[in-house]
Amino acid sequence: MPQLTSLLYQLVLAASFAAMVAYLVYFVRQNNRARNLGRFLLLLSGILQTLYILCRYVEAGHTPITSQHEAVVFFAWSTSWAYLSFRWRYTVKNFGTFVAVLIVLLLLVSLLSERHIVPLLPALQSYWLPIHAGVSIIAYGFLSLAFCGGLMYLLLERELKSRRLGFFFSRLPSLEALDQLNSHCLSAGFVFLTLGIVTGSVWASQAWGAYWQWDPKETWSLITWALYLVQIHQRFTVGWRGKRAAVMAIIGFASILFTLWGVGYLLGGLHGYAT
Image 1 (spheres, rainbow, N blue to C red):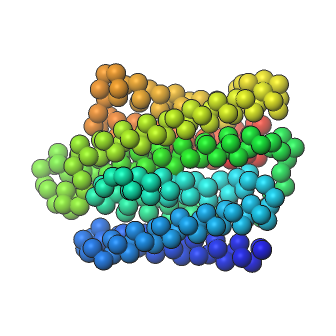
Image 2: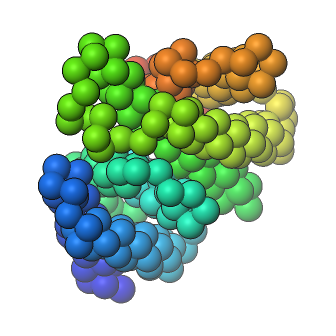
Image 3: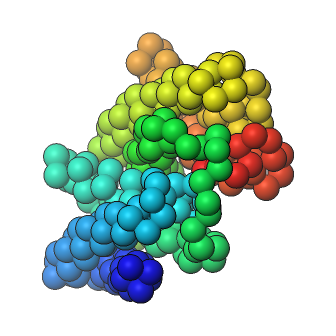
């Protein structure tokens, strides 16, 4: 089983990198064959990621989401399938290019992380582990799409403001389409993020006897949730659109990354061992 798991991981890396290259070729040359190849390879990568996670589950005997390597692989998996589910319903020009690059960057982080299986600590031996951690990572996947859309928006908006229509203008969708993308991904991600906060609180109550202990990771999770709550509120009540919404999507994603990694390295706390 360890050999199969290792082989699957190598195939995940190869398929994801090949998908990114194919999408980048399409982005530069607008070659439809490269786009179709990129779509196929990204789907293949998503399937291989699923198989890798399942094999690691069998090998570990628990949900593989308790180490940095596992958390980042789950993050890449969530981003992949969030995009594939989005792509099934909507078509956004060259969106796959930005998503494929992000997936490869996440997998590179997982490659640099320790891959050995971490024994499950007593506090994590609960059915709430896959529920809380899984829902939270799924939220991150959809919110990473909003980040990609926000980045695309700013690149196109900058080119339009310069009145020199060139590379990005011919390759990116309209600002309106990108704003709608942001709205859809933000709404889906926020629902899962809220569920992650709620399930985490219930689990904390069962494990430590209190719904909230203001642990650094809990605090930053709440800050991240509040940032997205502001975005949701402002978008649907006072009509935040365009550049402001794109910038907030990027800031929110930066907060996610800090919650996922920065807190554990810099602040520690009860969640220092977790994802």
